Length: 107
Picture: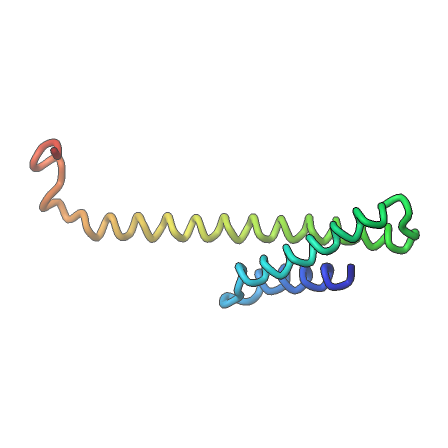
């Protein structure tokens, strides 16, 4: 469980601070850790876990919720920047020479 927590903490911190962070690679590692954890929990059963492990799961859920919030904000920012770039490109290309208003509808 510690590997999963560490991977999530690192991803959350890196998304916040590192512009060159490899989100895809981190997501692969995180997914692998979560898959392994899920398999282990299914094999042993959550009900049979000691209280310390249940506390760790609760902490992990909180970290995953924070991670989701950070990823959602990151994706929103990326989408916003992409939309601004698209608008800038369209404005630069649309100098009016070949506009629909000048030549009518395109075929």
